[in-house]
Length: 62
Image 1 (cartoon, rainbow, N blue to C red):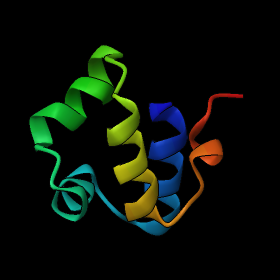
Image 2 (cartoon, one colour):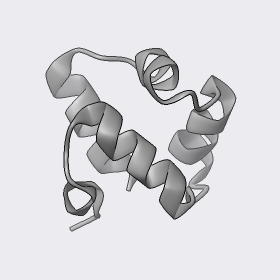
Image 3 (cartoon, rainbow, N blue to C red):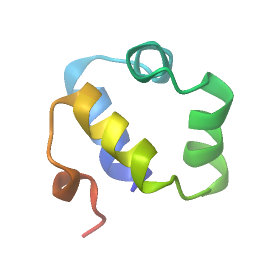
């Protein structure tokens, strides 16, 4: 999932810090998803999708 999030962030010129501020998810938690492959809960995925203004489906790995 994180690969898709990173692609969207890069296209928009946004950072993980920005995403943290938009979602209220701690920076450290987001980096756990990014660097350690930790899977977020459904609730967290919804927050990320809302912050990025995308559908949950667009965050799925292909």
